[in-house]
Every structure is written in structure tokens, then in C-alpha cells.
Amino acid sequence: MKKTAKKKTIRNNIIRLRDKMPALERKEKSKMLTQNIVALDEFGRANTVMFFATWRSEPDTLPIIKKSLLMQKNVVLPKVEKGRGKNKLLPIRIESPENDLREGVWGIREPYKRENIVPDRKIDLVFVPAVAFDGAGNRIGYGGGFYDGFLKNIPLSKRIGVGFEFQVLRKIPFGNKDVRVKKIITEKGVKTCFRTPHS
Ligand SMILES: Nc1ncnc2c1ncn2[C@@H]1O[C@H](COP(=O)(O)OP(=O)(O)OP(=O)(O)O)[C@@H](O)[C@H]1O
Ligand SMILES: [Mg+2]
Image (cartoon, rainbow, N blue to C red; front, side, top):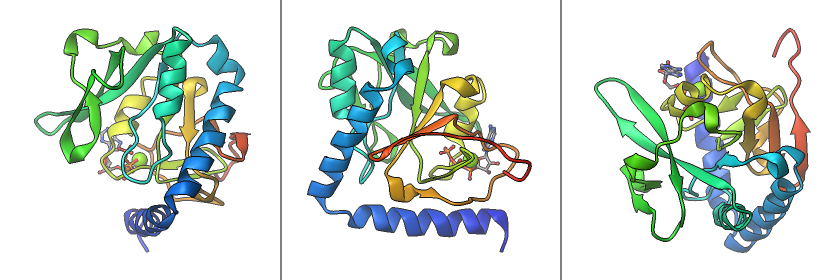
């Protein structure tokens, strides 16, 4: 099977499993995941943190967004920018998840105040959503290449994957445009990703 076809199969299978997770289980696991983020050293030190707004069956990020705002951190979320052939993510600061988000493309809630765009170099940590990861930090997203395009300008040490434990697979296919993460946080804890000659 070709790499892109393999990625597609993994996407379909994992999303189906994640959609099947009971709401209560998702809530409990999201709570544990939030605690694991709060306990992270680099989170404590970070002034500006980028999260993502929960879409469908993704982990619930609203608690960690609120917690970060209470801790006086700058909170940044992505806005999908659809351009002529170049789709990209714009990092925009929000002050309130209730007031500063609107429904964007594909029904994903996103910030809209372009005057609050944050330069990449000001972002201390990026929490990255995914459909699947592997132990080397490789990542499969929804297939748009949006995060790949954005993360290539963010140093590896600042990229932290977020997902449920069952989304971390032994090995996933990856290409030269796929951008890795340094750590992966799940409800079970934090993994630091190491690259071997084959990963
Ligand atoms: N950095 C990039 N610049 C331009 N195109 C890219 C980049 N990364 C990926 N692409 C293109 O985007 C398409 C989807 O890539 P891929 O399947 O890796 O997406 P993904 O990693 O699942 O999505 P995302 O990163 O948005 O979560 C591919 O055609 C790929 O060539
Ligand atoms: Mg990719």
C-alpha cells in the first residue's frame, strides 16, 4: 500500500474508534490529560501557549485554556486561512474562549481578531492535535498539511502532541513534509520521543 493510502486507513480507523468513545470516558480522560499538562515543567515556565479548540471527539481543551488564562498566560489558538493554493494556520491570541471564538471552516471554533496575530517566535509551546502519533513523535493529522506547514517554523522542543493513549501507535508512515513532535501527552502521562535510524 502507498504511504498516503496507509495514512488514510489509519485516519479512518482511529477517528472511528475515537468517535465511539463514550462521552463520560472522554471527559474523564481529558481531565487527566489536563492535569498532565499542568504538571509539565515547560508549561509552568511558558508565557505564551498555543492550544487548539476541541473538534468532534478530540480531547476537551476548554479546561486547560481556562486554566492558562487564569495563570495569566497568553493563550493562542489557530485560525485556518484558506488562500490561493496555500492553506495555513494563523496563531491568534484570545482573552476569552466564550467571546473570542467563532465557527470557521469545517465547523471548527477559531479566533477571528486578526489584530491579535502572534509572531511564531513569541510562542513558547505549541500543543498539537493529531489523529495518530508514534513513539518517535511522527504525526498524522486530518490530511490538510496545515499543522505541518505551521510547525516547520517552530523549534522541535516547543512542539507537544496531545491525544488519547490509544492514538499512539507503534509505527506510522511519514513523509519528508511531516513534522514531528518532541513529546506526547495523553491521559496516561508524558512520553519523550526519540528518533532511531528508522523512525
Ligand atoms: N509543509 C508543507 N508545505 C506544503 N504542503 C504540505 C506541507 N506538509 C504537508 N503538505 C501537503 O499537505 C497534504 C497533506 O499532508 P499530510 O497527509 O501529511 O497531512 P496531515 O499531516 O495529516 O495534516 P495536518 O498537518 O494538517 O494535520 C499533502 O499533499 C502534503 O504534500
Ligand atoms: Mg503530515
